Length: 303
Image 1: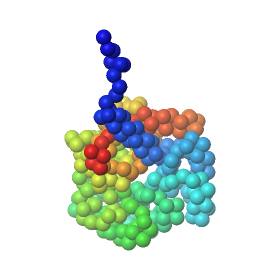
Image 2: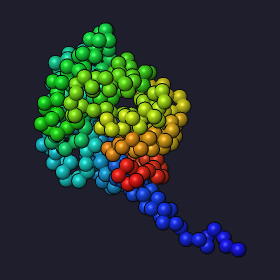
Image 3: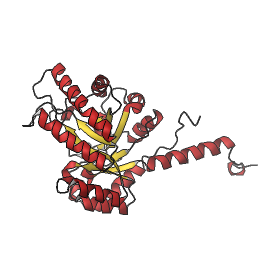
C-alpha cells in the first residue's frame, strides 16, 4: 500500500507553490511603517530602528519633521537607504479649526515639495470636516483644491492619495466617509496624480467590503493597515493587525486579487502601545504584518 508521501508533487502543485512563494516575497517587500506607529521616537531614531529591523520603507509624518530642515531630511533619508511610502498629511480644505483654505493650500505645497525631496510615492490627503458647508459646496472646495495642487504634484512626481474615513471620525478628519464619495472627487479632478488612499481601519464598514476592495484596487495609491479594537472610542484606539476584529488577511487578498501592487503601511495609533518601548512596538508590528502575507495569488499575467 502506498502512503500519500510516496507520491511526488505534481507539476501543477509545484507551480502553485512557486507562485505562492513569489506572492509572499513580493508582499513582504512592500511593507512599510508609518512614523506615528512609533510616536514617541524622533525622526532619526525611527530611521535607525527601521534600518535595524530591515523595514523596506517608512511613512513620514510632517509632525516629526518640524525640527529638521528640508536639506537635512533629504540627507538623512538618503543615508538611511529607506524608501518613503508616504508623507502625511495635507488637506483641511474647508476652513476648519481656524485654518483658512489658502493657508491649507500653502502647507500642502510645502509638503509636496518635501515629498519630492525624499522621493515619497504619495502624500496622504484628508479633506477636512464639512465645517457647515452644504454637500455640493464642500465637494467643490475639495475638487478645486486638488486641481490647484495637481501641477506641483505632477512636476514633483508625487501622487495625492485621498483618504475616506470611518463615519465615527467625520467631525475630526473628513466628511468623506465612503469610498464612492472619494472616488467621485477623484473622477472630478480627473488626473492620474490624484488617486485613492485606503485605510483598513477606516474602510472596513463598506458594504460588500471584499468585492469593493477588488474593484478599487487599480485606483488605489496607498493602503494603511491597522485593526479595529473591540472598544475603539477614538482614532488613537487602533489595534495591531490580528489583535482586533477585522478580516485583514482577506482584505489584503482582495486588494492583491484586484491588482494592487503598492505599499502596505502599518499605521497603528494607539495610546496603549505608545506607552510601550518603541522598538518592541515596531517588532510586534512587523511580525503582525508578516502574518498577513497572502498564501496564494495568481495575477493575470501568471495565468
